[in-house]
Image (cartoon, rainbow, N blue to C red; front, side):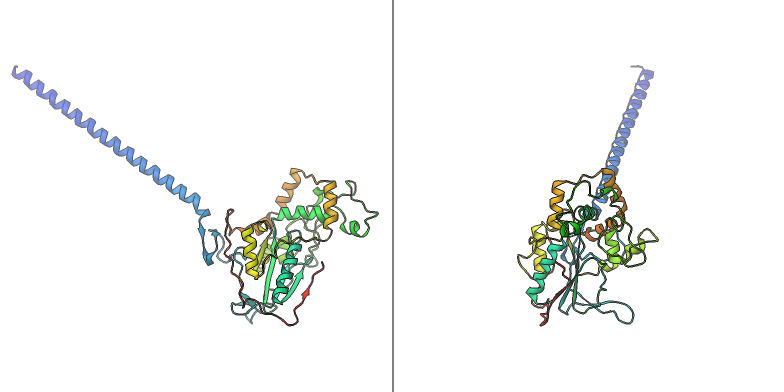
Length: 362
């Protein structure tokens, strides 16, 4: 091989070596980019997965199952999920209510929300009062008048149900036909489609009409924002129910217990409630409410049919009540199977020599 040919061969060899090195560097660079993209994707997907789970993470304050909530710091845990035995003591000179965990209960105050299982709860709480020989006061029809802490040794309880479902039930069993006529004038007043009122007209704070603004709310007929009216005592608003919502929630969240209608068929819930009150086999006992048999028979003969538009209108008008209800029960997961309610002991209730049941119209 001539010198010139040898030089040319060496030059081609160096070129090929440089080319292979370049290809190798490119391959390493591509691999590095690929792994970097993979790591980036994993990080993004992981962060999104964690973010989507966060609202459902459960925290167990006071040994209860609750959802993590983004609520104002001033909002306490709901007594629907966290019933307690704290006794409210009358407000001091600063206007603040103090609480005691050492004073036993000698009285139960039950604010009966209509069409939310209240008649059964009356019967249950009577059993509680008789078992422990304490006072029981039942209030229905008006707003929740008694201030928390105004009566020493009182346990405050009430009941809630999905507000739209409650409103529809109220219409079916008390608003659709005249209950007083069905009971007192049964031979002449025969329920029919002709004398039935229209569901589409059941869309006011007072049922078929607006609640009065010049007097406290009266819970006889109500279709819209009934909870806010009941616990604030106000049947009118000037700021889209914001003021009334705050007043109502502040009162409700100072109760000792809120019965939730949708939980009544849950055997674990029933057991937790009975243990909280220290009684057995007393919950969910059959009970007849006023105008119940008559209105049930009438609705059986003439089943209620509702238009989608009417339901949606009721949903929209009850927006603040739905928020009120949701915040009372949102501390539960949908699949909650345990209720870590406190259990009554021998010191929870203080027997009274002259115990009595008042306010019971049934």
